[in-house]
Image (cartoon, rainbow, N blue to C red):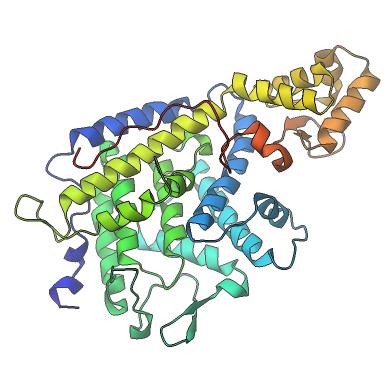
Length: 413
């Protein structure tokens, strides 16, 4: 690597300082508008339950991008501290670590204590929290020559033996990673003061962080958690009801787009009209256009999936197929709307005797459609994974759901 390419200038441009391309500005406006509508028809308690469900989904897709296909049921069992089949246990524990870190990020945001997601300290914290909870099987990385090295949680690459190649891309040498990350943090800190730039910075920071590849392992998942945190800071978190990882894993049209677009954004500057940095400004514009189109697509998708009337109707149909009285669907609908109801109110909603109401509530709790803190406390809605494909078509697998078409995307726009 030449000395010139080992300077932090290698990751420039980090964003668009002279003039933000109009398509990106338009996408930002659409994203803010769509995110502000997410969950508005649901009670905040119902939104909180759905957000936990989405954390599992986000983790599932983030790990899938890395080639780790973890069953959602195993993730939930690991989160509950239940036994998981020995062969699948490491993947389940890895997934649990991801969900727990995202919970912490969300908690910091709710408390108004989320620091700048692009600071070196925050990125190191995410990696440390993730790998501290990682099973031993995933705490080691393979090196050329058949050797392995221990992954130290929360430490950037520093030693020559930790130099890496990612396909055709050769990230900065380990000895200069800290310098690159200091530059990265300084550059993206500038975007924090410009609300109109924060959303676009989320896209460009995602590529530039992966370009640096600061850790021996875990860069992809850490970068996606950082993107999630940046979405929260940018005001487009939508109550935790959409997943950036789902969009990146699936793309707009095919699953290979993420890898192709990341590779495309690695392109060197193409002549004097292609910005003033080391990398192509046009390619960065293409990547940001694609990334933000994915974000908008995911927000629109989950907005359709979590719309109150549609969700309540899917519950009604499922409960009818399971042999429940039609009034059970009305009870679920009421809980969705009001967040929770006292058990004593169930008879009023169901228009039955208290004894019949208790039986109905007990069955719904036993089957995972309702939950409560104690056997006698108020009940809240729950989203059992056994029926996730019926309640949320296409969230984890390829099932049809009535959702808007993804945004149009072409290079050079």
